[in-house]
Image (tube, rainbow, N blue to C red):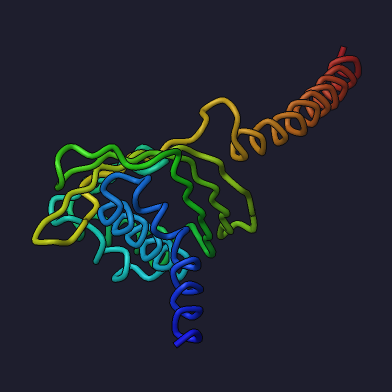
Length: 198
């Protein structure tokens, strides 16, 4: 009997953190369902599992990508992802993402929520370029028939400070002096030719 009381006490004490979290977090079940959605989505994204991604999307989903392109509906999202990662002229060879949520999803009733946060995305491009892009995102989530789905996503990155802009700047630092040197050589060549004909 004493052993049973001790075991019950140990089980109760070990369950206290979970009980405390549930009590401290309003709508805990909803937020846990949204955490699970984020987890499934990340696994699918990092495996380039397009079907897995599409399972988490609402039939009327709208996605605004970081290149400002917009996809509507799961088939529009599929077309974009396949073009970028699987078509004969695909741009992205490899991709890995981590999505961080800034705070609990803001709920509007029990069937709609808005979440936002940051992202760290690593790209391996066809031309051999690799870079890490830090961005921001926001998403609208809806619960239909007891299942949370993504209704819209907007992703963005810093227009003035990002790896693509940095690589363009580096290319300019090389291209401008090279162009100036070529112009100088052409000028010298034309100057000598003009001097010979004069």
